[in-house]
Length: 324
Image 1 (tube, rainbow, N blue to C red):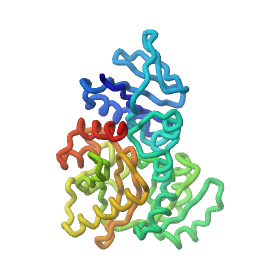
Image 2 (image 1 turned 90 degrees about the horizontal axis):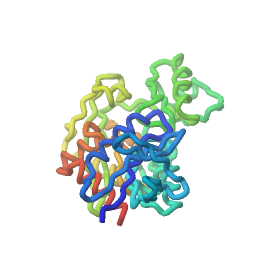
Image 3 (image 1 turned 60 degrees about the vertical axis):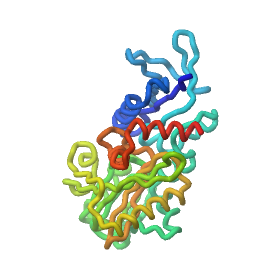
Image 4 (image 1 turned 45 degrees about the horizontal axis):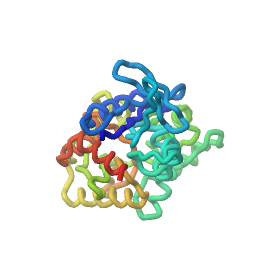
């Protein structure tokens, strides 16, 4: 008997369109002989199943079911393809846990922790993981530009604490552009962090659960045509993503070891993709994405394919791991 799989996409953040693209790829790649696959849009204004003929069926939030032609349809598992709020920050996963519906992501606490950049960095630092110097601000805090620059130096990065796809991030070169950068970040989140600039090669590494084990995927080197790996570089072709990364065997092993250590420290499950800057050949952890892009052009699927894992196998494994 086929299992009913809800692929949730959309969300409440600036990443809605990217999420819908990821979710559509997942729907296309899942084995239709094995699963009944449903596109489920989670939007601020409504939650609904979108049928192939573009008919919408409202989701009953009491048990995450819907009715079609008078028949109630429930799901066996949810594939989470929502980047940002509420899929990547744990909110939706807490709801699924509450109604005892299995899903492909880590438990809600782990999702919330990794989505909160400053909390995540604070935890891994205790285990000896190298990170950038940082200043944290909440909206309304007094801003002392001199003290901030004294701590993190110039240039520095200003980032929203809970946003993805590089929305709201600025690279600041001079004190007079710090306040405008902070205002841009506050448009995405009421909490921000300001980090020192790390000079070095940027690499991205996927760590996933695969066939019951933690698996580190081939490392990707990021070469941005822009000043940093911003939205344009990520999604509009303004970067090179080289897999496997052009690094020595020794550095490769060091990055793999740190990436797996972070995955285990944080109690992760399912997908993850962590970003590092190699400073004097030492990996410095930047952040972890727990719902990374899942299109054919996205980094994690590229890494999986280099490891001999097709998209269909990657997505099927996520569902089977969740069901077990």
